[in-house]
Image (cartoon, rainbow, N blue to C red):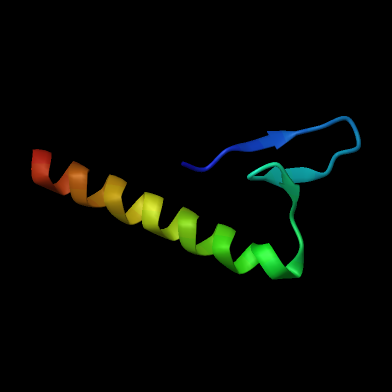
Amino acid sequence: MIGIEKVKSGEIFYNNQAITDDNFEKLRKDIELYFRIRIINLLVQL
């Protein structure tokens, strides 16, 4: 699951790591997957 928290320095962390170019793509894919699942669930409920 995606866990994003803001810390005092203003850095955003993802899986307890500061977001870098290396893990940003994985974060983006996780967010995309999360919203696809949410949208599918909403459509199923209609």
